[in-house]
Image (tube, rainbow, N blue to C red; front, top):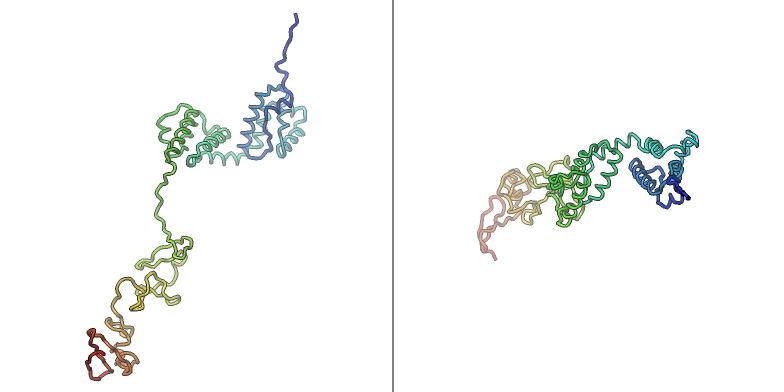
Length: 325
């Protein structure tokens, strides 16, 4: 009777190991990239049925660039025999110390603490949640902390429904979140935009970009940002001594002033009284001015009726009334 023994621990060839499509590692990408590579490598080791003495030999063949330089240094430090006698667990621990710096771990802890789902991007949120939970697993241990932290970062459109369902495992929470997100997308719930605050911008008449503006107290004058400390404007006429009128009122064709609505009372620039202008001021005439009634060469015609006018010629002249031609 012939007995045939099969050595189940014979392992595999390096070609068979590569047929399982392992991923190369060049040492870039930080802690998250290292964790992803380690997970993929463990999957390949399970499929390839490797022997224990083949672990580090095959895995070190996946190193490139910076990772290969680091491994060569370990071989020189530990010795070739000791380096290749390491187990996968021991090699992984050495690599964890190298590619998971304390500063990066602190940064990832902060990111994980503030991680939230952006709009309907549930797949991206789930992937990043998995990556960070593998790098800093102590932040989501035990399991109920993982579930609570995952639900906390969900979008407002679905978080209340996931919370009320009280999922018992992280898998249930993820599956329910994906289903509710797809339903919310179908109902266009993610397209609803919250009401924005009232803007303090105005669109310029020339089609320029929006500019910050406000209104000076007591006037309707628009002031651009950076010009709030500019010289004060004349509130009565809206004129600036240096650049002329800078206000928002149109120019009146009757009184040649800038205002809206009906013309205001006439104000004399000579005496300051209302009802007449400088050209017809009696006060300037008494001081021998050139304007008003002090100038006999001036002729002022005041309309009384559509057919009748009054001619007033100088001071002391006889007032005559005649028919208009």
